[in-house]
Image 1 (cartoon, rainbow, N blue to C red):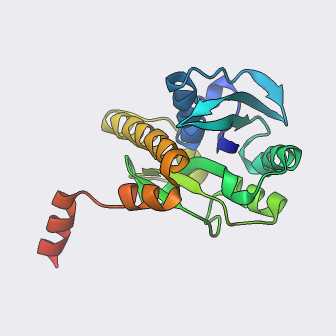
Image 2 (cartoon, rainbow, N blue to C red; image 1 turned 120 degrees about the vertical axis):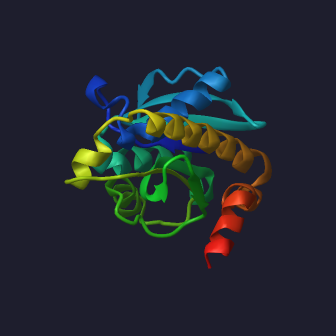
Amino acid sequence: MYIIAGLGNPGKQYENTKHNVGFQAVDLLAEKHNIKVNKIKFKALVGEGIISGQKVLLVKPQTFMNLSGNSIREVMAFYKLNPENLIVIYDDIDVEMGRIRIRRGGSAGTHNGMRSILYDLQEDQFPRIRIGIAGQRKGDLADYVLGGFAGEAKELAEQGIRTAVSAAERILADGIDRAMNEYNVRPKKEKKEKADEE
C-alpha cells in the first residue's frame, strides 16, 4: 500500500493558491481514478483506491501547511508503512513554473510543510514530487505562495500539476528510478539552447 499526500491549506480562500498545488494534484489523481477523497481521518481528508495496480490512500492534511507532519505521522503509524511507501506532492519555489522534480529523499529546503513532515517522521528518505511555482516575485515570499495564478502562469501551473499526477502514476507502476529518469529531464530543445549559450 502507498500513501500519496498532497500538501496545502484547507479553506476556500486558499483553494487556488500556489501553495495548494499539492492538494490540486491529489484532486486530479482522485478524479482520474474515481477515488472519493471525502472521509475525515488522521486530521486529513482521505480516500482509498487503486492506481497503477497499487492500493493507495490519497491524503490531504487539514492541519494547515506548517503542521502537515502531524497528519502524515498518524497515517504512517496507523498503517505501519515503510517511508518508501509515502509519496508527498508539494509546491517548490526553486523549480520553474510548469516543471516538476522527483527526489527519493533529502532535506525540506525552505518548505515549511516538508520541514514539519521530516520533523514528525524523523525520516527524510521518502519519494517526493515537487511542482514548480517559481516566477517573478515582488515582496514577501509568503504573499507570493499564498497568491493565485494569472494568465500564462495558470496554464503552466496546470501543466505542472498534470505532470506530477503522471509522475505519481509512474512511481506506483515502475518505481522511483524509472520515474526520475523519465521526468527529471529537460526537453531537448531547452538542452540545446543552454548548450548554445555556453
